[in-house]
Image (cartoon, rainbow, N blue to C red; front, top):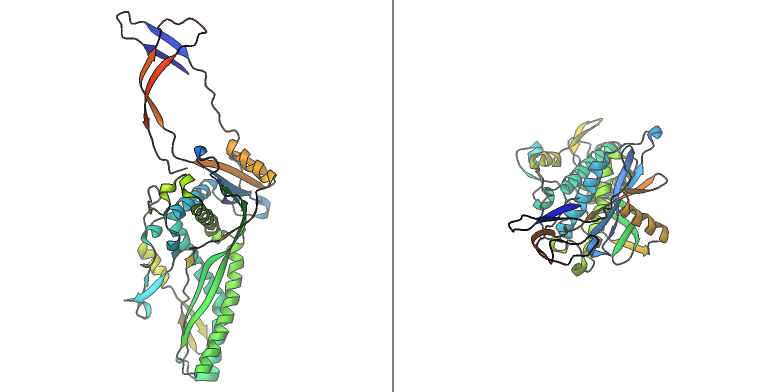
Length: 400
């Protein structure tokens, strides 16, 4: 670094000086590597002056096996945005559902998403949860055709003998936390495994001209069949090769880490003032409410030998209380991987890559106001005492 200071006397003399500085840069480049998945995997606040150290885990795609290739930049942004969103929105608001209400739609109903927290709805994380709910709904529809055909046909043949007299029901299939395992200490955590659960429930069955016992049998058969469908859906949701649910898997890891982060001593945390603040600065996006309400009242027709029958299955995604099981300390090999990932652009272990970034309040901008020297004609290779007045400007950085 080279600089010059000028005095204000009539001779307009000046003194030149050099400052030797060391600049540390990261080496390496992730360009040219195809990834099939990437999730937030490690965070550390052990050195608050270094900010929040964040490491993502990416798996290299096997192109010959036709692995889905993701946009690693978009995946990184999604993971970090989901973490920040879950940081600023209180845990009890971390859920979505698509209800219906009376209105000028099919069967006198229209979609309704008004129960979802408005802040969450206006974030990328909220959109990911909505989209996962829609995907699960269509998967459930697709798998339930045979079940419903059998139940409805059997009811008409053995109970009502009337193709217009069949039971109605409310049924729900939704995504919720299953488990999160990790290693770590009070100030850092490394995820070792995570999985989501797909649950189902038949809330009520009515009508159809049957007895209470017949309706209960219908409900039991529907519940058992729907539970089997939910179990199949759970396998798909957690299958890392299934791209349909890749975003909800990525978001789940980020939300789990954010909720763990909130449980730490807030006095020592970076971004402690943002926790549960509902401050969406840099996270707010538009929300297409009409689209999601149209998806809330989607229904399918199923054909059976007496005619057609429409039905709808409700859903939702609920991530309000993710419990992370800390199984032990981070081992030395993993610790070294994480340390190297924060020093270099990435570290590699077989087909797995760890790449890091740091989120922290920016260090103060130092604006020089006055610099004083005890001499204007220094000898070579001498130290010069100086007096400096500076102005400090603090800026909080929220984006990666």
